[in-house]
Image 1 (cartoon, rainbow, N blue to C red):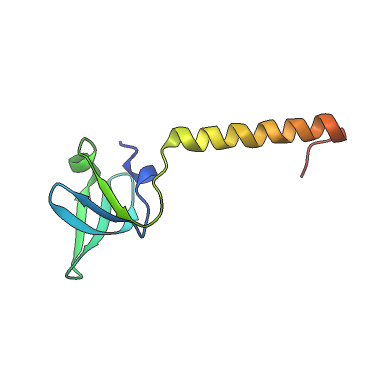
Image 2: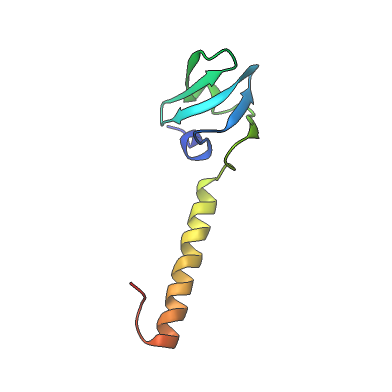
Length: 90
């Protein structure tokens, strides 16, 4: 299994391996996208996992490490609030 689905998001216009289209769904095993002519293209993630993907527009890609970093910052803030208020926020 790859982490492509956590990086690609619906609404992104992408270009990879000569294919251009807009991501409709990004799952663990397939990417579903629509090409410029409105045709649906289903690409197995194993075919693009090692390829360079250009995101031309749409939501900014996120890597799993960024999500972990954001979670750690949130926990740090909660701990800081506990120290100043005596309880964790709900």
